[in-house]
Image (cartoon, helix red, strand yellow):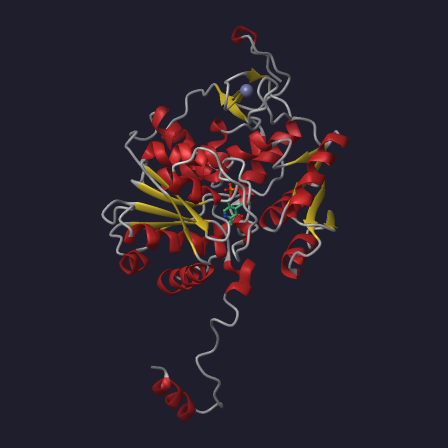
Length: 422
Ligand SMILES: *Cc1c(COP(=O)(O)O)cnc(C)c1O
Ligand SMILES: [Zn+2]
């Protein structure tokens, strides 16, 4: 509990360096609470901070997960004392073989398949859970089509909370099982994702102690994505890359990677060197790429039709802010076909031994397209965000890859099969 009367805002909640919620449109500030829309203009709210002193040494002395950045996140000082999924500090690997295939000289992969439930969603959910506990919630909830459902059910299980996860009834069996296994309440809703989302907003208003991570505690949840930017900078040896390519669904992640880089620069943790942020979408759900190409500031919603389901948000809430970040830094937003997505998955696996889900295929294939069209500088140091594991979307490659040959158990047959390979 803290009272910061000298700043004119008082709050009953200890969310570390978080001072208030501030409107991204009009700047109006409100005290920390489970709010997500501005009372003045209905604009989205974002966490505003008063950062204390944070040094490279203090971060390096922290735990080997996202809580090493707890002094830069809206979480209580004692966050580590409560069970959570402790995601983050996933590997950043030099990708020379993929770089050679794409014609990029200095390429890195931030491999977020290594998180507890195998996608970057563990980062945002961990921060949402920590904030939700302080805000007095008791149940962790979300509408989801997959990765978020996994992350919410797992985090709630570890914390000993109940969870309420809403999914469209038509969801693939694999995503149902990988959520249901964690226990909690899993409701398959008759309807599509838009229906599920609407239902979540309604339920959030009815149930005082239900925290829908991406609805009523969204400002806190979104901040979790900053840790991707922080980790990339720290793992590069406390400096910023020159280019970063980020997959775009709601667009939140891209804007927060940018925010993470900017905060590290402002805090003097890295030299504030220039960088360009690029967005990647699947053609079957590319409203942000379309607005970028047409020079528009507003996003025209689309009906998604792509195998990249984790990116299939037809009406992306943070779309306009993605356009801002990309245009301000000199980047671009591009899109690739489902065929190119599968090629991207296979190229990454073949060259670097990293099996990504469809969102990773979108990032790799979009990077290829950006190089070929001259929008991405092949001589500048570049980081690709690989945000989810290929085991989550096996359908994308089933039928595309398989055994080289089926052979009897004899060395002669193996010899023949090897000779037939090419
Ligand atoms: C949710 C998700 C994203 C994109 O997240 P946004 O912040 O909504 O743009 C990217 N990759 C994967 C694997 C995801 O699950
Ligand atoms: Zn406002």
